[in-house]
Amino acid sequence: MTKCKNVIIGCGLSGAVLAERIATTLQEEVLVIDRRDHIGGNVFDFKDLETNITVHRYGPHVFHTNHKEVWDYLSRFTSWYRFMYRVKAVIDGQEVGIPFNLDSLYQVFPEKMAVCLEEKLLNRFGFNRKVPILELRKTQDKDLEFLAGYVYEKVFLGYTTKQWGVRPEELEASVSGRVPVYIGRDNRYFQDKYQAIPEQGYTEMVKRMLDNPLIEVCLNTDFKKVRDDLSYDRLFYSGAIDEYFDYEFGNLPYRSLDIVFKTYDMPFYQSGPQLNFPENYDYTRSVEYKYYLNEKSEKTIVSYEYPCAFEPEKNERYYPVPSEDNKALYEKYRQKASGLKNVYFIGRLGGYKYINMDEAVAGALKLFTEVFSS
Ligand code: UDP
Image (cartoon, rainbow, N blue to C red; front, top):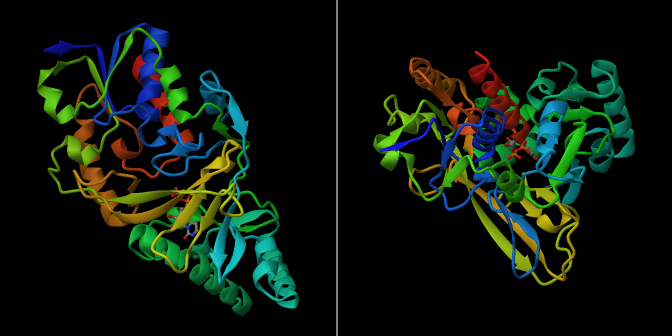
C-alpha cells in the first residue's frame, strides 16, 4: 500500500497548480499520477528536433486572461512571449478576420452594403459590443437578419458541424458565443489584458511548478489499476468524472481530435498562425506553430485538426460537449461526487466544463484556498 497525504490524478494544469500550492505553502507531500508518458496534460508541447519549432501536441494553446492573480501566479514559473492572436477564416476563398467584425463586413460585402450594415449594427447594439451569433439571428430587422444568416452559414455552421457533429443551436449558446460577432475594429482573436505563450514552452512551465522534492510524479500509471493500492487523506481528481464512477450513469460524451502534423520545406506556409475552414475540407483549422514564439527555421510545421467522437482506449478527451442532456447527466455524477469526503474533482474533465487554461488555473487556486483554509 502506497501512502501519501495528497494524491492528484492528472498532471495537467489543474493538477500541477494544486501540487505546487500544497507542496510549496503547506510543505506536505504530493503524489501526482498520470497515465500518459508526459507531464502537462493537453498543454504539453515539445521542440521538434528536425526544425527546432515548438509544437503543441494536443492542438493550439494560446494563453489569455483578465485575471491578474492567475497571470502573476503563472509568471513565477515562466517568462512570456507576448502574443496577440489573430485568426482568419477562409470564406469563399478569401481570408476573413475572425471574430467577424466591422472590418470583416467590408471584406466580404460591397462598400455600400457594408456601410449600411455597419450603421444598423451600431444603432442596434452600439460600438465595441460582442454579440453571439445565435443572438444576432434573433433580430427582426431584415438587413441584420440577412447578415446574421450570412455569418451563421459561412462562419459557424460548417465549422461547428465538423467540430461537434451537431448544429450550433444544438449546443449551449456559450459555445458559439466564445467567438461572437464583434461590433468593433479590434482584429485580435481575444481582447484579454494578458495574452502570451510561455517563452520556454508550457511543458517547461509545468515542470518548474512540479520542481519540488515534496512532489513525486508517477507517469505511465493508470489510476484505475493502482487505486486499491493507494491510501491518502485527500484526492484531487482531474480525470473524467464518469470514468471515476465506472460510467455508472452512462458515458459523458466528449469530442476528440485527430491532429495531423506536416513539415513543409519552406520558411512559411500560411499567412498567419491560424486559419479556420468553415467550408470545405474535413479539418476545422490549420495552425502554423513557428508564429507562436517567432521561431526561426528554414522549414515550418502546420497542424490540421480532424474532429471526431471520443472513444475510450482509442483517442483522447479534448472537449466536453455542452448541451442540456449532457449537463443533466453530469449533474448525476456531480451529486454522487458531492457525497464523497476528501475527493475533489477538478479541471475540464473533472467538472465536465469547456474551460480555458486560465479558468483551470483560477479554479485550482480557488479550490486550494477553500480546502486548506477551512
Ligand atoms: N466557431 C466557429 N467558426 C469559427 C470559430 C469558432 O463555428 O471560425 C465555433 C465552433 O463551434 C467552435 C467554437 O466556436 O468550436 C469555439 O471556438 P474556439 O476558437 O474558442 O475553439 P477552441 O480553440 O476552444 O477549440
